[in-house]
Image (cartoon, rainbow, N blue to C red; front, side, top):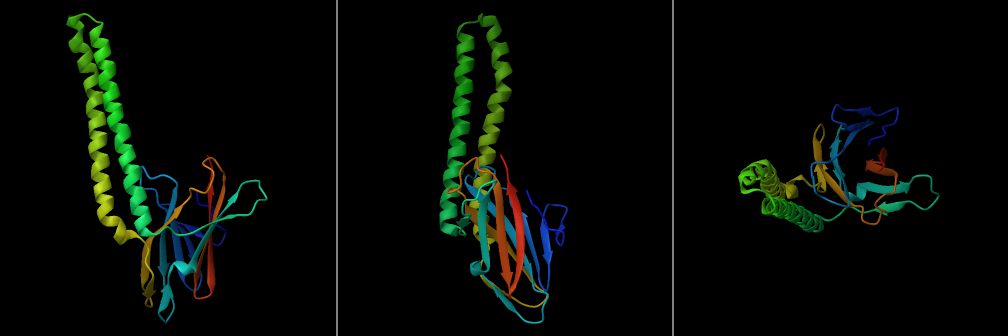
Length: 208
């Protein structure tokens, strides 16, 4: 959850806007339904100056501070695209496996009920479970479709080092692996975007 400062604005979609000599906008990105151990932001940088400027991963830093603890913050690095694509494939493959297991589980329970009931009532039981089968099948088809879509477009969505000319903006996803953070740990992500010497600081809380 975003925790904007008094000097920052929040857009209708939850984007936090930091306006100084340049404008930096950061939004929590949550469209990957089945991805695990990740925090992903959509970053937008707008050059309001008269000269071109360069922006890269070196301009971005993030650390996680646990709630009510004095332990050192955990520094995170932007995950390389190749590693993220592997994780995306694995997480969606696992999700597909869970849906298939659910389908077979439903089939098994239906078979058990039919085995011990009057044959006249069997059709009623089958009709009752058909919507569950169809729903699970639709979930599986949608999960496969979404993964294939992400597989094609994610490389173009990820933030890349580039030059921003005056009055222009660049945007892209910055992805962090949170596997080193305890699953139920609560705290805050502190993100700093440095643009030509000025710092744009963002705060996002994590709660269970």
